Amino acid sequence: MDIVVKRWLAGVAAVTVAAGGAAALTVPALAEAGAEDPPSLVEDYSYPGAAAILDQQNIKLISGDGNIVLADCTDPPDGDITFIYVYTSDLSVNDGDAVCFQVLGTPGVLAMEVPAVFEIRGDGRIAGSGDGHDMTAVVKPQGGAAKTIELDPDGSTPVGIGTSPPGAPTTLLKLTARG
Image (tube, rainbow, N blue to C red; front, side):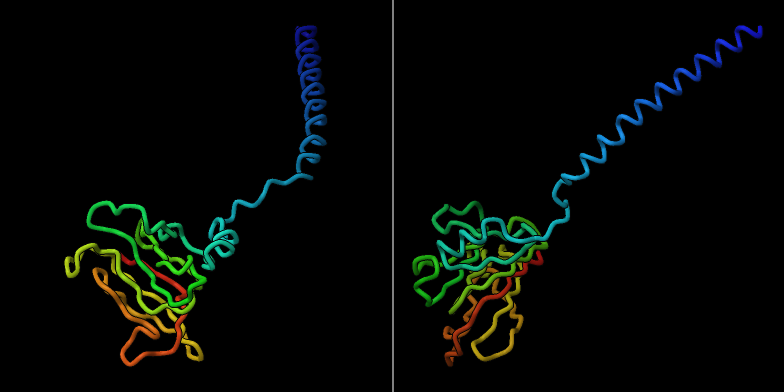
């Protein structure tokens, strides 16, 4: 019996040494891998492709949650919901055309800077239908403080020089969709 126990202990010792050797081999390998850490998985919510959009369309998209996105106004709308149309008097913005945004989900938020905005049209296709998203916009008149306004979900909301009497040129800073 003594021989069996000795052989068993010798086998356990050999396995322990072998495992310890393997562990010793893997520790430096792990330390070397740590030198090239992968990028952080923390989301900063910056808008993808924002620099190219600013360069091509003069629209500064800052950040958002992905539920409100820049859209191509020439794409045909689907169903009773269309795009949010932002009209500006600055001809350098989107070659003088309207700027469109699409709500992909609620709640949604998109921070931006669109200068000289005079009208924001809700995304409901038929005026008064109640199909459009419940939304607000943060706008900042030139020389004034930023303020939050309710948007007509199925119609137009005048801002800045589009109001009566005409106000100061106004920058659109944020769109928020609640439902």
